[in-house]
Image (cartoon, rainbow, N blue to C red; front, side):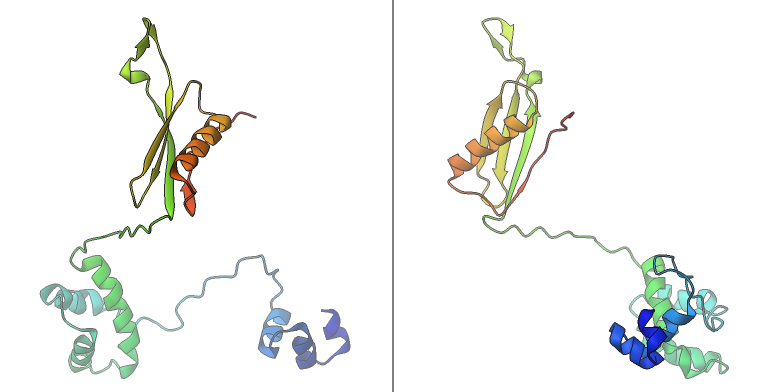
Length: 194
């Protein structure tokens, strides 16, 4: 804004580090950058509005493997008023139509574990086992550490509740036993009331 007072518009924009077009847009827009802009609507009416559900969706259901180009070539034959400018609109609508009306796809989340990359850490309440010492019930936790790739495991008995000290002690003993540390350790951090 200060540069605009003493310089021409293009020069002020260049000195501020952005293009003249951005400068004009900022100058004409009286909203703050943090205020959301209105979402842009359609610039023209949808040419496929009346034919998509009636004609294109049945074609997609009848021949799931049909290509969008084949449907594009068929539509101007049936409706000569449609121009060649509908191709991208038709392709977009077919892609979204297949996601809604197409056959279900199997969803797979691949889990590729690399050696030495991930370690998991958690506490387990062992009270349900009913361990007794000299007739007295022993309530304890087990700190458990595991490497994802190799399956290395370490367990440490905790005779108190979940605490930061218990976590550090268990993790330290596990890493000493391992002889190193993985790149990433997912810790189950206890909720501390401070």
